[in-house]
Length: 248
Image (cartoon, helix red, strand yellow):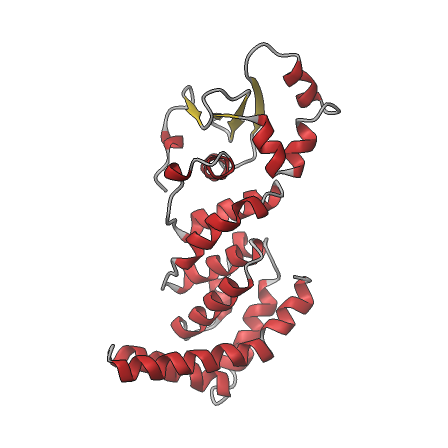
């Protein structure tokens, strides 16, 4: 991810040049100068931390110059991008990101309860669908954390179309920590691996074959129709089980 957080730890990234706090993030203590007012408006945890009843908030109100707040367990690059969005620095916000970077941002935004503040930015990032199954698995977790039902459906449908083996092989610690992926993978395996003649499997194979044939208007239309039927099938058989287990 291209980011100014690659600078040395002694430097300060000015998100807001007149900011009243310095976030010292990660083991290298990457420092971001930000405005407490904007962080508090976007995040309930920051609102509590920087409020008058917490030590950080009390110290901030009686401190000469920006107050440094240590966040040793957080991802500096993810928090920098979140702060850029919260501070309306749209010209500095990346328009596209690697799937792993998106997940780091989503996990951090979920931790600080600022998912809603990143709604428009995350919609832009999630439009850039990847092809590799490993990336699609990460993006499914991203869509889930950002509560983007449409992106969740599109990414999981793309995952079905681009992966022919067991979905359990795509699991990783960062994904498993977000939601019960074994349920999703077992559900996919049940319909796509163990039962190759199920309607969902035939639709997935057919849509994939049509995509590989060519880009003529005829094949594109047929592929689109099969993809639509596939998503409708998943709406009926896959997503209800996921939502029932996760409560989202």
